[in-house]
Length: 391
Image (cartoon, rainbow, N blue to C red; front, side, top):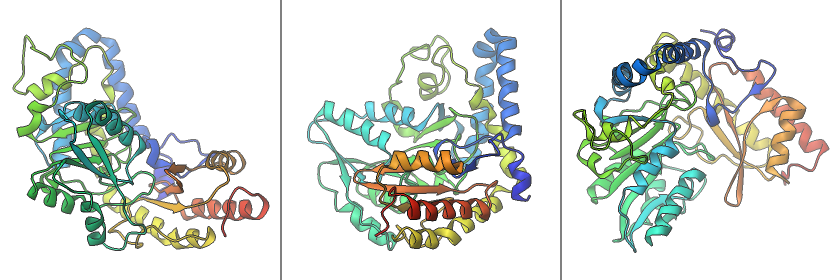
């Protein structure tokens, strides 16, 4: 299907050049209609929907998601976002003074804050191991990462695809090495499902959290937490509710604790079968491959324009449907607003420590012309404002 035809299936404002799919995703009309149908069903008979039929609906949705991710349906539970899932995990780790969690200095800011909060309370240390950029090889990354390992390391935490730097990391290799060393493995897969193939049976992470509302294009507030069955008993509910000492327990304490937590609209979770059908019907693997090609074909010219270098080799090994460019703006926030207000370009410009990145995301509805307009806008900004330093 052509990008113009796919673009018509989205609810996005046609006046906006949307290059920020990576932040919140966007939902096609067919999936959004399914979402509203579930909401109407809820309102039509809320008591029966929530207390009786909802359990079966959630099971059917989990079954489809589990097949898509290659895992058992009862090893998944739906959550509103990966940050919620990570809080379940970190709060339950029983961290002790002196314990260390090994991570990278490329992680998502909210995840860093979560680890910092709970490690500080426990007297543990969150190690943000420095990673040399640009990446050159997987082996270089792995060597950098494990320089932070020592006898105090209790677990590793790593993104499958980083947020601000948009890098695909060798998570499978990291998990294999960590398991050999007896470490708990926790993977942030917020940007994984829908952008790259995710096979949890092959990955073998102990814990994996991902978003369905990003690259899978489900409605906002649809994410999941996967925990290896042997470890599920370790993770307490973030909210204690009816699943604790349930009068009608299921076969899974993990689901009882984390699935039914009082009154909430879980309609977004129930759209997953429609989401997966949409991806299949539109041959999304081919769509994603075309998007990666567009990302990579434009990467070097943006780096040349902005006087910088790519953060990694321009290849499928390290890049998916996003590309981040190091920039030196006078103010990231001012530049972002200027691009939106003056050029109708929606694109994130993100601070990450002392660094700043402009990240473009490409999905089915984007075309070369969208990136051309960004290129012209940046060229004009360099010529007529002091917003960007390219020296």
